[in-house]
Image (cartoon, rainbow, N blue to C red; front, side, top):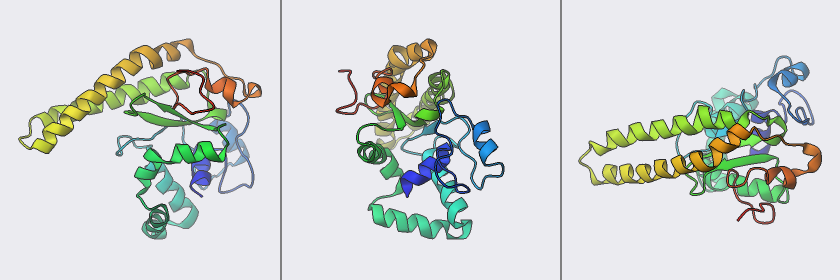
Length: 228
C-alpha cells in the first residue's frame, strides 16, 4: 500500500483511474492531467521527493504520503490510519522511508527499481525520483532546489545550535557540520558535474544501463550498480 501511495504521489498511478497513468519516458504532470483532468490527488510537481530525517521541505515524502492518505481515506481518519500503518511497520513513517523503503522497493522490483534514490555516500541527503518522469534537467533541479537549499538550512541550524550551552545541542551542531562537509564534497565531485552534463536516459535500454549513468549519485545497489 505504501508503494502504491508513492506511485500516486509521483504520478505512476491515480486514485481516479485504474492501472498505469504515467509510464512513458519523460512523462509530465500535463500528461497526467490529460488523462485525469480533476485528480483527487495531484502528483508531485517536480518529481523530486526529499527523503530526510525531518520535514525540511514542504514536499517531503512523509508530508506527501499524509496527503495521499487524506485523499484516499479522508482527512478525519488520517491520524488513525497513520497509527495503524506505523503499528504494522513497527516504526514511524519517517523512519521507514529513511531507513527501509528503498531497500523494500529494490527487492520488490528485483533490483530493477523504477523509483530512484539520489543519495550522498554517507546518506546525508536523499531524494526519490520516478525514472519515467526523469528529464535532462532533473539533476540540476535536485542541485539547485534541494541539495544547496538543504545545505543552507543546515548551516543556519548549526549557527543556532552553536550558541547553546547544552552539550546535546553542541554535539548536534558538530554532526551537522560534518554533514554539510560531506554534501559540499558530493555536490562538487558528483552532482554538479552530472547536472551540467544533462544526462539523458533511454527506457528501452533497461534499468541497469540507465541507473549506471549516475555513478555515486544514486544509492548503490548490489547486483545493479557497477561503480566501486
